[in-house]
Amino acid sequence: MRSGLARKIFWGSVAGLVHTHAAYPLSLAVLRLLGRRSASETIGGPDVAEPPTVSLIVAAHDEEEVIAAKVADALAQRWPRDRLELIVASDGSTDRTIDLAREAGADLVLDLPRGGKIAAQNAAVERASGEILAFSDANSRWEPEALAALVAAFDDAAVGYACGRVRFTDPGGGNQEGLYWRYEMAVRSLESELAGVTAGNGAIYAVRRAAYLALGPSRSHDLSFPFMLRKRGWRSVEAPAARASEKMVPSLAGEAARKRRMMAGLADIVVADRMWDPRGYGVLYAYEIASHRLLRYASPLLHALAFAANLRLLGSGRIYRLALAAQLGLLAAAALAGRAPGPLGRLAAIARYYVETTASIALGFRDRRRHGPPGAWSKSEGTR
Image (cartoon, rainbow, N blue to C red):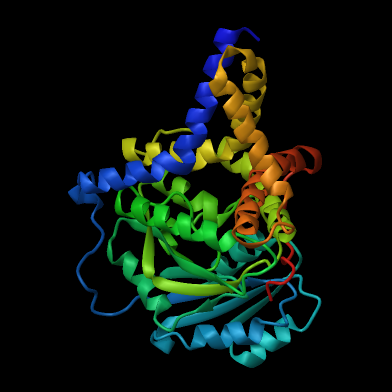
């Protein structure tokens, strides 16, 4: 590799990493201050005389530990009971999930063959009667006003998808997902105020029935709906007052495994479903997708390119020796996670979280190539 090309690769890769992880949120804050939101993108509309009908769908596989509490949680929502339909879609459960869901008062319990979460959700939507389709995980707990806050986002006729905010509880074992999620929520809030969110979360979200898309088994509502609906003319927003909580995966290893499973379908979403294609986005949303999604998913490649180019440039100046030291320092800090005490241990845990979650993207792509598209899903240990 010639030094001129190595410099371009190194600085281009570093610029991509710095932008997606640090400069992008700052740029959103600046855009908000500059008032880049157009009048047509403003959320909010006239109050409706009668609240819409809502189907709240919970896909579940062997959730006997939590399904009764989830049904009770859903029925405790401050929403007219005659306008709420609660559906539990059992994805091939082999335990007492179905019986317990019925006993707890679910309006409809579907006993489906094992096909994966997306297949269960699609089947539930076919049977649902609501104008708004809300979704939740079996182990998520919603605040009593969460459903009302979520549905309120659809007062704007342009909104097709709305996600709430999830808080992770019971942190432990060195998992830094809670820290990451607070950062992610701040970025998502800025995106929502501008062109729309680029991803959601499975704990609490809703889709206008007219906007719902029956996705394939390797896809994800969280990652697919925001950009796919945008291409069809809908906005995807955050409803910050719609709040839920969920147990965090207790260990870093468990979190890395969870993310790796999620990333196994990423190639289908980014490539086959054309997340990369800006047509239909508009300039600002295209910027959000490129910055928050495409560059983020390219992080493993950018790190590898920066490292390789850095090795080639070691004799080209002190800055490249410092850059290599920084990269090796990150890996060394990650290796210390769980062994270093006090504040140093916390920094080491953050470093390891970053390294493992970045690696999970590459490992997920590799799993997709080796084993094909993912379908069925399994619970993360310690989250029930």
